[in-house]
Length: 156
Image (cartoon, rainbow, N blue to C red; front, side, top):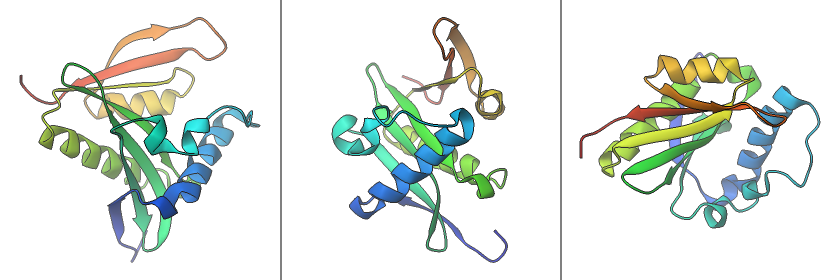
């Protein structure tokens, strides 16, 4: 990152393919081969998640990360589809994306952020725990146990 400026920018239609490729590469890093019928929301994320805010992290012109904030009921929003390109991980990019999404949620009056991640992704669980999220519960059945997290960011 030396010399390159990290910018968090709004998602634009031209970002669709780079975002899709970035998220799928992250999933492939974790799971190996991917079933092409999964993750269809990446083809049209705005239609798949009404009201979603998607951001892109860029180092100069290169897309190096992404994340999304989707509104939910009762003053909540969900953090989803966070991903950072493998060669740019552990450089603060994920933290910058998350900070941007938290600030966006706060400005919109969101009181609570929630998210779900694979329990097997202990580094992702630890990332969120270090940033003020707490585990609410886990679902252990099925091929991919999930961990659910929550962070309160505002008062009603």
